[in-house]
Length: 286
Image 1 (spheres, rainbow, N blue to C red):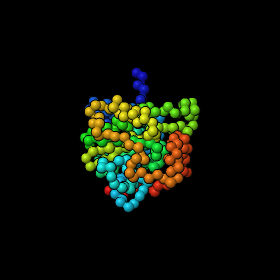
Image 2: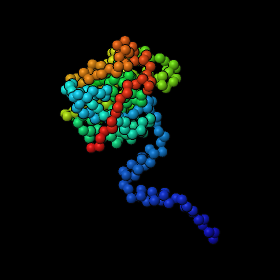
Image 3: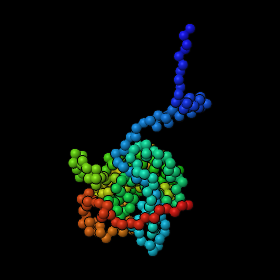
Image 4: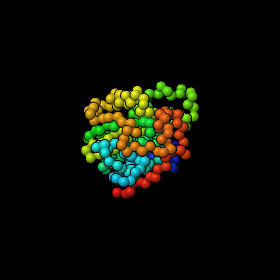
């Protein structure tokens, strides 16, 4: 009788161990493991824009002016100095967004702490040259639905729904925007923010041109059309405000002439060299 060929399993010990481990799992755990392994093998899905995440903590500073200001205080009063810090690396894919979002427990933020998801090239600062002509919608929502409201707003930003809702009537054709840096100058959406307050969460949506009423209306319509009814706040709990109308807005001296001229933000070419110089301290450990 001929000998049965030997089966060599050199290098397959990991597989046998995984099989043994799977045998010990319940069917639900096996499906979860299979899903995780599948996701690991998937290619990253790039986002249309590159995004950055910032953390901010506000402090009362009665006699200490700063270019960094809060998006909106519940009372509308007070002077603040804000510590701003970029968190992690930039977000360039859907997978990177979920890694950040799944590890960012916004419901644990302390009083007057904020998280911002902003496009590369923009910072959550009213006086930033890219922001000073703009404004934002602020939605005041209860803490019970704040994290889910924030999650939905982030998805509308990452998925370009908010950008699509803005007025781009003066934007050049896509064929003319072959250069990334040039196309970035015409982006209308700056970013979105989440702030913890005493009795509520404030979610803000920033855009570049407050003079474009179609953009102002478009942002609100996008929220109403895409969020579940149970998440929508009452009309008295959301409002729109231009950045320059905030009591704490301080126009950088080098940008005063541009602001007074009413020149559209798209036409004032922005470089890192002519940005206001802002000293930013990282948040202290708690």
